[in-house]
Amino acid sequence: MLTVLIRVFRVPDLRRKMLFTLAIIALFRLGQILPAPGVNVAAVQECLAGARGGLLDMLQLFSGGAMLKLSVFALGIMPYITASIVIQLLTVMIPRLESLRKEGRQGQAKITQYTRYLTVALAVPQATTVVSLARAGQIFTNCDRRVLHDQSPAMVTVIVVTMVAGTCVVMWLGELITDRGIGNGMSILIFTQVIAAFPSYVSNIFMVSPFALAVMLVAGVFLVAAVVFIEQAQRRIPVQYAKRMVGRRMYGGTSTYLPLKVNQAGIVPVIFTSSLLFLPQLATQLMGGTGPVAEWTARYLVTGDHPVYITMYLLLIVGFTYFYVSITFNPVEVADNMKQYSGFVPGIRPGRPTAAYLRFVLSRLTASGAAYLGVLSLIPVIAFVLLRDPATQQNFPFGGTTILIMVGVGLDTVKHIHAQLEQRDYTGFLKRP
Image 1 (cartoon, rainbow, N blue to C red):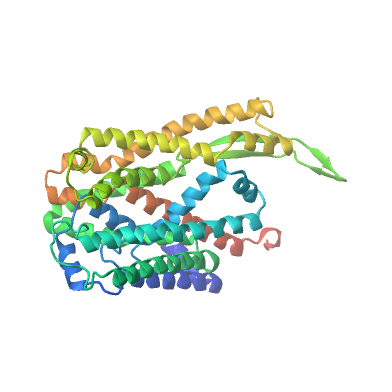
Image 2: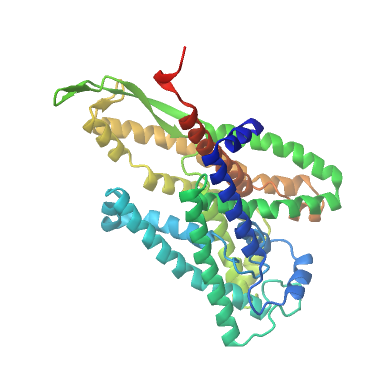
């Protein structure tokens, strides 16, 4: 990795892109630290000192600590991620979006614009919910300090508008990284959010038990290696293209393969499941946290080691994995494209038989991918059983979502860097003997 970085900084164009990406990341982190107007910074810091567990850990992870600090970029990249997933789901159900997706760059630009509008529409209720919880003292349930200097409707409106504007700026920063930096901008920003909260968990574990931290770090190395291996694993389906005449030229006659990843769904099912299981807890907090529904939620859906929670978690991950793979990979469309260009799988007839074969292989891979995501997501639960110290359990940093984000974005960024390096180093037939 050090050799790759040295090669990157030796190329002027890549060096500019790398420095530009690092500058945008620094600006993004500054916005996550900068408090919104009207926030009592001293009270927030005091409440953060004793805030752990449940919904707070979820907010801490996906916002890099910005949401709990009520900063300008408090919502982070999550509204855009949610909007992108929703638009991707609607593309399958709405014919207009499906036709736009097939129009190429122009259609994709319109879909991106719709995603931006939906991001703003989702950011408004999210910011309103966060500010309302802060105003009612529901974000930090064990702290009675007022985190807002002025709780008037006008000031609340100003904070909400500031957070929504911050979300728009975060979208712009992510697109700047994609256009002028290295890698996918949105992925790098969410990677930054997760990494930003990681050192605090490690330092808290060190203060509680240095031995537990050493064991976790050693186990984390093997866990990351296993995740990298599975994330890179794929089933390569051989594809043969027959020779065909186009005008006066002969095309085809080549052999290639269709790569199908074991984890075809990526991290989306885990994010869906985590968000869905935290919605009841958030709703009970908005309703005051009293009543039979709140008691049932606190009993079964707050502690991650309860059998009901584990069962629901696994079932939702499996269901979302199959659902997301089914809408992102269409075997019929792939088979039709192969048939259009005279391609076929050896031993399988083109058309419907090829689509059925792809559907069969994909279902087997999806089962393995769902099991992999389920086991990876249960790692914190296993840690809860093995680690008897409650403080160590609450600060356990190697969750399934954390590892998937770090490994997935890291691998994707390294691939982008290698691709650009190979473009500049490749000499082909011009290479001197």
